[in-house]
Image (cartoon, rainbow, N blue to C red):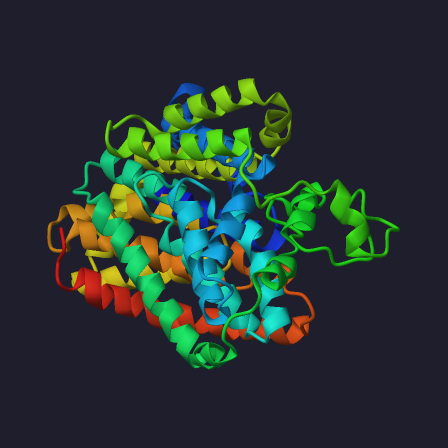
Length: 461
């Protein structure tokens, strides 16, 4: 068996173990990089660490640190309430508010599961109160998060654009962002029509005080740590109440201890200013997103250290480990020639368009059960030699791979889908799980072929 084939099989094993054993894929990838690098590729430690993505490490830590501060001081809660007030309580617009809100959060740098973890409990509580389909509301939240997920300053966008730049491929950050936004917007529109969205217009508007009370956002913000951005348990499922509310028996008893999340405080004003400054610094002055965000986070931490203590624990360390591990292993594959070997194998199919659609389906199927980010980190470099032949447009192919690997996150086996399932109150969870699984299967079957037809066949890039 050739060394290249061994390294590919090890990558498959990493994905299988991460899916079936709930082990962090990044940690597995680091172990695989060590084993394959030392035993198969004859690399020393320096050779293995050569593929470590130091720039992406800073980006991931910086933007998630800044966003964790925004959560800790209530800025994100203020944004939620402002969005609800903006539509004056119209029930039919609430799903679109949730779509736009999660899209805005991921577009400015929030990790997709973090944005879903914030918005999903609020969105699903609205769904339960006003008779909105939980599948519709959950889909709007997840597709909103993915719709904004490839902005030039987002986690996904930075990762994909960084990979494209390092692999010396033609890139178009705006095309990537718009491709994901439009695909997810179209899917959300179809879901809105098919699952009762049009009937919601007949309900008119609800009183703003009632709409505010339905969110339960203040109690949600003070929930235990396992429901605030770690990707697990976003909604309490047992009889244990959050600290300060146990044994109270009523929501009224908790309100005096709950911060007012409907008004702006100096910390929230400063955080909103920092988020705007990040956008301007990256888009206007072309500054590094990671270094800029971590600098802004440090400034906010110095001014409000109590928020910093909470925020440091909410940095997306699992995502950092995931990305750095997978890309380090991909670096090992690159040094031992596996990427070139695999790309030539895909290109050897003889029908470039067929090879392209197969790659899209591979990304979608695996991502429905594992990490979307990990799939993108592995698939795009593997497609480099194939794209270098010039028969397939690199810009369209990268966008199709990115969309295929992320739009399927509605699957209940993915992090976002699991968050939606956990956050839904007053539902038959087995039935809701089956609905999410069927819907995720439809997305996996249909979307890769559609994005291949629209983005790859015309030859963009």
